[in-house]
Image (cartoon, rainbow over the protein chains, first blue to last red):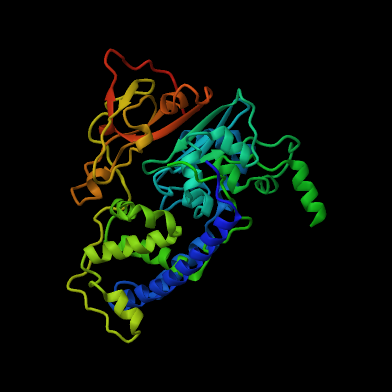
Length: 219
Length: 219
């Protein structure tokens, strides 16, 4: 089936903008009512937003991965009981009640989805990106994972087994990507810079050491 | 559902695309913490949106509609109250007849009271049930054969009853591995599989089979 052309897209976006303006007004009205009823305070909403905009995000997960790459004992604890190992670094909370880490290797690639809604390991990755919550990813990654990963820039050889994890209960999954070559002796902090959100969802590899060097050179 | 086209990723995506998205995220989370509804009822409220609405509004637009639905059903919001406030910002809020009751226990993990019925390596079949209400067994995996890959720890609140105010009924949860060919037919990728977290009551033993043991599908 053909994907919508640019014209379709333009109409969808215009419709979406009108919808968003209506929803913005509606959410403002709803918040004012809930505040006046004494159910919530605007400050409590502010505090939650600050937490998810500033304190929690994929940098947390990157620290977990970098620690696992440099500390074999930590890696074993992480694969055995990820919730506890992640808590060692101070991360936990809602949508992280029970976290399982799945490890990529030369023969196995793991990728995470929530086909039913948008389940995602908030304490280590923050809130999910829009594409993770959109129907395209949710419907296709379980059905044709190799094709979707290729389209997303991750071409896996046909013999590499792909394991899709559909988070259909309260367990949350985090992918432990392969450590890139050429990073021997790198510090944990430097390694964490190679670990992207997409690598921990499983739709990308960790960045290559050369790319990171080039980026640092340009910066 | 098919035909959604490529997964479109946005570079440097913000946590929220507009102020109202963050407000709704905060309001919904606070409402759930207050006991306006539980997380399963919230997920079901999103599923109850008309399919055309579900697909045409943005992610937080679904949250806004689901939150209004649950606030109305719980009598925390009067019929037409948001519309009245939109027409006239001075329209008074309807006072609460009663306050929501916060949940007695947080999260969904509960102590295990019964030994799990299935063991790692055991072949199982998912039930082919199509309930009118909420369930966490996706349609694509109903009536399919799989293998127990992990027995998740403890027991977990059953969304099928909890979403409908019929109690927690905690059950064992298993990561079940399904080959892509079992799910999608003979043309599917022979080196791909999907793992789903299944509540025990979603699973039936396959006659004449027993645990083969020693297989750790999680690695």
